[in-house]
Length: 234
Image (cartoon, rainbow, N blue to C red):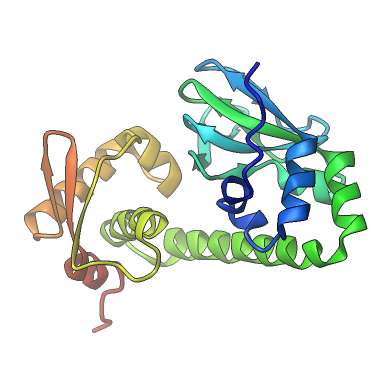
């Protein structure tokens, strides 16, 4: 089993821990355990006890819900630098969704009792955790707004912009390239649409100069994506 990365810079790269001091980050490394998951592994299921959270080092893990008819709704796709499973750890309730490794993945598991003990001993860390949870809530609100209030062309444009902001931050360049790990089926699940409709929306964005696809690379015209993502009302 690989050793736990003890570098404060590594742990601070995860948004929830970015305001932790070095001593606290060293304690965090002490309570973390390295794990690997093969592609297709169900890490936890909705209703399971939430006794740990996970930081992702490599690979891709999806968080999803299933209807009684077997239809899947993908809530999030987590890659390197992400953290998930924290909600059940902090509110002492069962898991609210399934977590499945889409590809082979690596990460660190942080146990509930150890983490709660850490933030109890160091109350200032609780402020950082609260800020992280508020950011997650704001992101969820924006996702719901996108699905409820925008047509599919705008929703797809907003999806590309959100993906770009994960890489570049809020100050986007005039143009940028993406190599998407997600399929159109994945994007459709995230946006609450069918794959054929998402395909038509991507083609429409290409026809209107917002995107260009070449050999798996998506070239994005930021200004045009922004105009489509937030169209002016007539």
